[in-house]
Length: 118
Image (cartoon, rainbow, N blue to C red; front, top):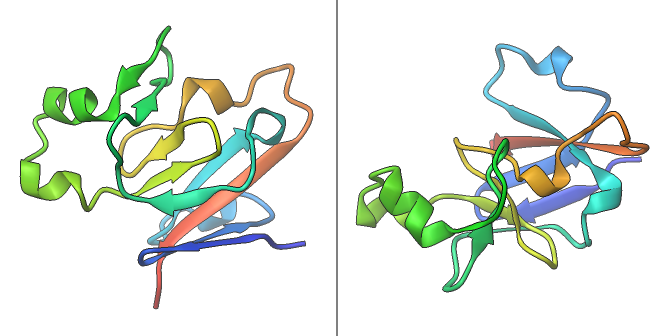
């Protein structure tokens, strides 16, 4: 079964695995499906958005993360985010969220492909 998440210029599909996509213009990520609160949305940032960086404790506002990364103001609105009902779970060209990472306790893995629309 394929689940499509369609948004501004991107399509995400559940597929058979990330390794087959190496070298292609595709971003692929594994997330713990049981830790997400569906539906998933692809969107740009909104006031008050927060994120739990992979490998860290606690959360950070997206605005502060973008400032810390020295992203120019003009580019911040064009960064694609994937969010569930709770928070941001992925930031384009940065990280997945600590909250949804795959661990040894993960029972169901959701594999997302992100690629520009042709």
